Length: 250
Image 1 (cartoon, rainbow, N blue to C red):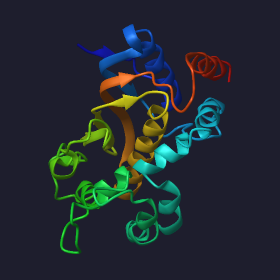
Image 2: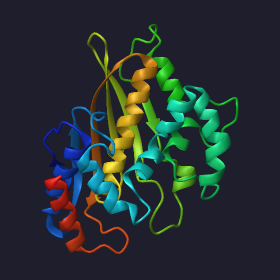
Image 3: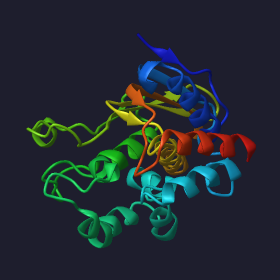
Image 4: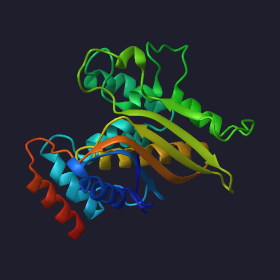
């Protein structure tokens, strides 16, 4: 059981086609939805009027496109401080403010950059991926993985909630220069409240890895093992329909 979405050129059109496909399924839900984006970086901000429509809709619920994207990759922090300095800035100035509990902050970026109980003696998994990709002595092109799901933190008695992004797999496609692709898996995916922000954030993550390792950014593939057309906040089906109409007209 799977639902393939034809490859789309950018994050915004991929969001719309995925929403269209899942919305047409019984119960407005689907399993194993496969989304592929040719260029997840281009037009992936509020300057794109289509992104701005979704941003405006979600801002009322406190889960804007930018807010969700920032949980995956804090792009402004990276641009301001550079790498690897921005990792420490995030830990020292941001993490304490956004941490929800001892398990995690709600920021996927936290889990990408430090292992549970991290100390100075443990590696930064995301920075390790960058360093290995740019190391000419590393010959394997398909061994750059980030695991977000953590059984020690995520197996509990909670009936709902926790991490939704579970796994990221970077690959280098042979070319001159090499091309970076990324495949990610979500255990659960809210397509109205979260999907576009997730796609934008993952594109920014790919852009960071590509810039720092000297490779071109290629396609992004997202597998939603469960997807649904949710109604964030107090929104109704009529609100979702109006959102989609405004998006199509933007």
